[in-house]
Length: 116
Image 1 (tube, one colour):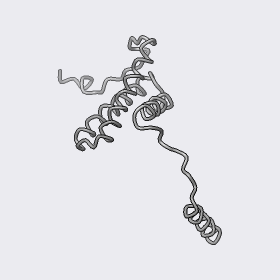
Image 2 (cartoon, one colour; image 1 turned 180 degrees about the horizontal axis):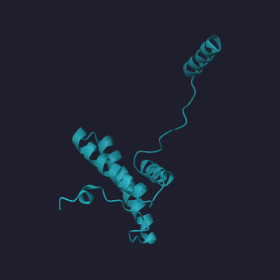
Image 3 (cartoon, helix red, strand yellow; image 1 turned 180 degrees about the vertical axis):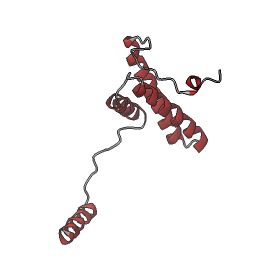
């Protein structure tokens, strides 16, 4: 038990583990649900500890999926985007340009020309 080999971290790859590829979509769905829960907690105004716990679980799950080669970063991003659209709406939206916002935009462009 005191052997140095016992203290080295275990390395696991998909070639060493048995993984059913049909479970991939199920696992991505679970990740999407975890992200959705984080967003719901934030929208509800939950305590920081509750949100942090949910974020940590989602982060750890995402790390496992990428480390084991089950999902790519792009796969996780798509799942997170789907959770956001389903829960709190898209991350960006089209804003209406008003006279005052157009004036601010023009002033910003003018200032950028002076600096350049």
